[in-house]
Image (tube, rainbow, N blue to C red; front, side, top):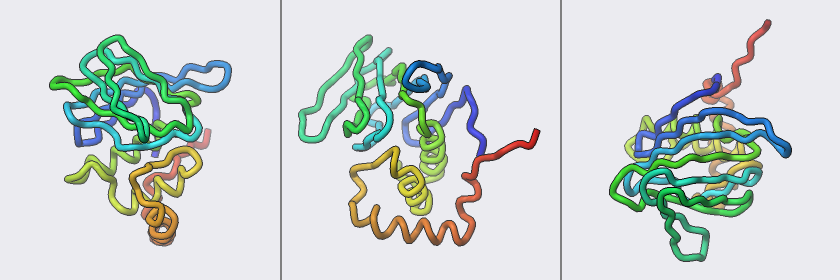
Length: 182
């Protein structure tokens, strides 16, 4: 699976991300992207263990929440940065499209992770990835991302077993990084 820039991905459930560029900066590469979120849509509680993630609202109203705290709102031209290891969720709290300028630093595997996630959700009737894909994302990227709404028992017992079965049957070959011999 080759992932280049620019790239547009669609969750199939109201979220589109347009990855635009990587900017090399001191302290790591900044991945710049645009998010377009339909009313009522957005990711569930998650955490970036290695990246800070920033958003600037260009259009619409962004609601966001940190665990145990009340919901906060951002309007056009307002910004928020979720530092690494800070769990968060956000969604479009308005009646029109939410459009945001966004970034993650260091870029890490965010583009690849989101590409696999959206590829899976876009084929389903719900905004959750298929079981084998969820297991792959959870195990393969466990040091970089965590979804807090998945029960610990599922992440520690069920997903490792599903991941092992997926590996044994070659289900994840589609996600292997393509290399070229030049």
